Image (cartoon, rainbow, N blue to C red):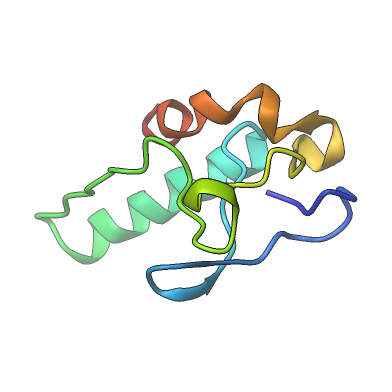
Amino acid sequence: VRDKSGKKPFEGHCWPGTSSWVDYLSEKGRNFWAETLRDCKTLCEATYTWIDMNEPSCFNGPESSFQKDLMHLDGDVEHREVHNLFGHMMSA
């Protein structure tokens, strides 16, 4: 996920501290996520993932969520258009 200019990765504050988020709408982001999960499964046979991010938590954003003007797909789509898809795309 990129900042509102669409040019650089967005950094916000979440549970682990300063964080960036995967853009699950992009093929590159989905491939990265799939490879990461495959790598975890390779390292440990009993690998489980807890996905509870129905929406992206960002504690320095409005209502503890993403700003609506952040960008997906390298700056082609505003977050306000896909906010409710975030959790679905993460688990797809």
